[in-house]
Image 1 (cartoon, rainbow, N blue to C red):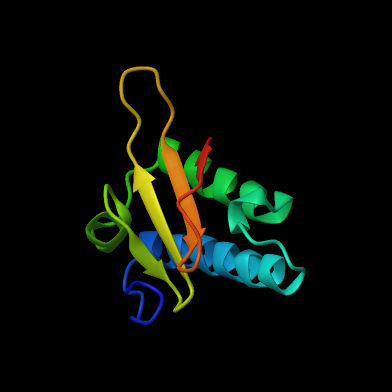
Image 2 (cartoon, rainbow, N blue to C red):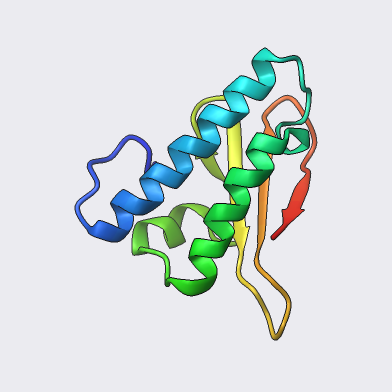
Length: 107
């Protein structure tokens, strides 16, 4: 998992900061009693920032392997998936708790 490995490239360090920010926002949403992390404006904002970054920058190989087109862990309680944009459609970041169903954010 990208969150537990040492980041060796500048891209990995940038992605690490985005992922940690999203994970922290998910934990805060859970502490506030919000059942779906993606329903929290803070999570939506941080996921949008990651989507914007990925729209202009090619993700690292570690990010591609962990999060693109399949779910990757975002800590022990949450998962994240990024689906690449296709012909004019923006990329989709999905964040969910392991205890809830999948909810998507289109950014």
